[in-house]
Image (cartoon, rainbow, N blue to C red; front, side):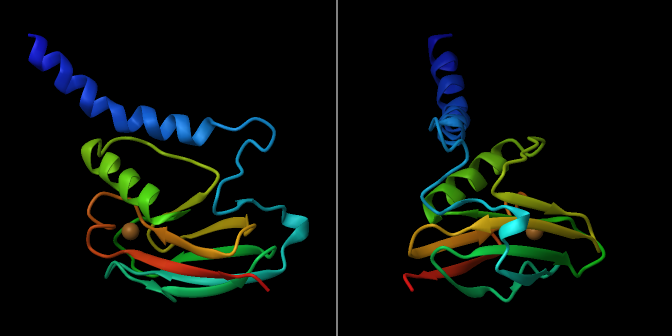
Length: 157
Ligand SMILES: [Cu+2]
């Protein structure tokens, strides 16, 4: 009995950690180390990203400048599968993918992501506030594991 209990606690832990990570921070509610939700009135550039049913993004490598607000227009080019475009750092995305895999029916909807129906289009406006590398991924179970991810290089200038 005691053993079962601790296993339950352990499997629930990643969700708690994720929830805490997403809702932490007072003033800038959704600000993260990899940026913050951008305003539609401040979009500097529109970047189109195709999400294919072959579990690949095109382009998979994107360059932006620190301070830029980008509107990502994500198009699912296959007609069979839904996809996502979730921004984050490598560690967080990996952990999030693990939770999604463990709880396949879990609905997630966060300010750093957009969901795309088969043949559909999703939009995400994001401001990059720090130089470095930001990753993006599709966290639908099986997609991330199949390599559905990409990289955004944020230059300091
Ligand atoms: Cu996908």
